[in-house]
Image (cartoon, rainbow, N blue to C red; front, top):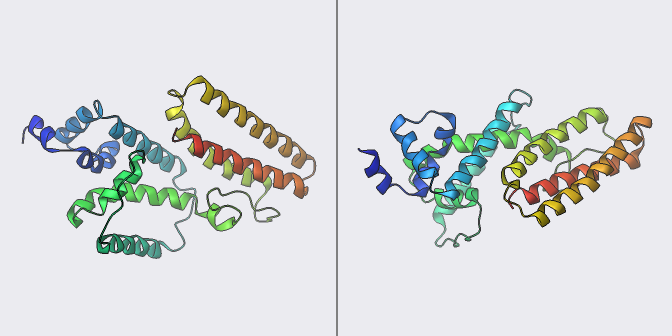
Length: 240
């Protein structure tokens, strides 16, 4: 089928199901040309492509550093149950206009047939890989459901090791922020930089205290809170 005819028949939903293969470079030349043409005129799909590339780059950087998820089969069973629950629901809530690309993609994907869902397997695998990379944080911390941090008083790893692990998460969200930072207005940039400076100062001070006294639980709590705040700030600004 000629490329121009395919362009007329495909919509954003069709293109977003091809993004995983597009980022991996496994699309056919014809489909690749079609997707590239669409991305030049569709900001939403271009943002989806950028977000997916961040996930792929992060997974490549962290490959081999973490063990597999402790209960991989249970994870896939939960995904299957969610699909069945969505199919049995009589009504669906309308997707918010301001919703992000991932919410819109997942909100539509359960309406597809199973052959069409096969095109989304690559993207799901990438998301599961990211979830696996962060599983040790979620299992080791109950202080916050959104941000994983240190475990105060833990003897399983040194402060430097746990700090390095947290920095990997900070690096991931910082990449997300950098993708959108160019379109911030001066006031937003100033607010972000000011808050980040305060948090970084707290991190530096607490690390200095812990270097002098590794058993200082107060400084360890301060460091833990500061790093949690840093991740929370990056997550908040990553979608702005």
